Length: 443
Ligand code: G6P
Ligand code: MN
Image (cartoon, rainbow, N blue to C red; front, side, top):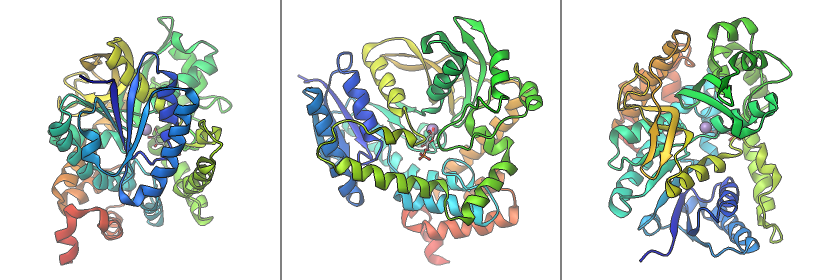
């Protein structure tokens, strides 16, 4: 007989973990988690211990009977799990620094989830996630895998196409952040505001925005053009949108769309920062050092507010709401990365899409969207092609597929440099790209 809910978090030593623990504590009445297993690898041992001890203090302070287990033994943790969340960073922040610096060196945008950086983060991550997918099939076949690891769209694509364990959902904090920001700017309670989200991860659009069921899309499009009321995230420069552009787009872009529609402005900013030696990855490294210093303090037993300076703020609301709605068979609407299954008619059935879903104990069921507006459908198709080729490159270790993925990505702006950048990044990251080892050692 089972005692209660067993949750496993892979990449448990992440600086974000206190936010997840806080989310579980807040929801304990509706979601009685009896065991939380924080799993990490040898290289993350110190971080796991620091953050794990803080998690224990948080649970003690809340007076809850939630056991916190810290382990390097993933199989032991996975065995009999009910929910598994993945939030690891293969190669740690050191690898992200390369993902963000190298493209800039070649005059292209450096970003951990888009362009060349996103491709490499995906290629490092996908083989590990597929291994986890296999272990889950064996050790906890009924558990849901809730993935936060970026690039969440690309890795969900790979897990749906190539993983044996199909109970997979990709989660991002961006939809919930957009809702919270727009609710604040419109001055309405969050529950009254609904957004019809559709697209891909970090490439999602609000096709309509409603307050109490009435469309307020016009007003929201106005807000999007107001330089004083920008909808963005901590990690993305809040560059204002041009009114004519937003009007003709006719839907609400997400903060990440700036990388595509404002490529030159963003690149210019990144080049300036690069000269001063501060990519976002380096800012995050600094922030993380400060956070871990705070976490070490034995008298700290709550999530410190500094964590909200990270782009992933409120991610735990997205994760915990999903877990709770599955557990409680709630039937509410959440924006998630799931198998398309005809929801967006112009995309393959087996591909991952980010759409609104009804969440019950059977898992998320996507709500039909139909065709995307012509203003956005082309870019979405192009990114989906990139994700499919990138997923194949990640699984097969094919140099040709990796070069193709690189070249068809709109943020990789030069075909000649694409190859040079690919070669340099393959070399720099080779420790984490075993699928390419043959080519790399024979070169
Ligand atoms: C956003 C994205 C996350 C991403 C984060 C990066 O919130 O939705 O997927 O991880 O930004 O934030 P960071 O503080 O690491 O730059
Ligand atoms: Mn995200």
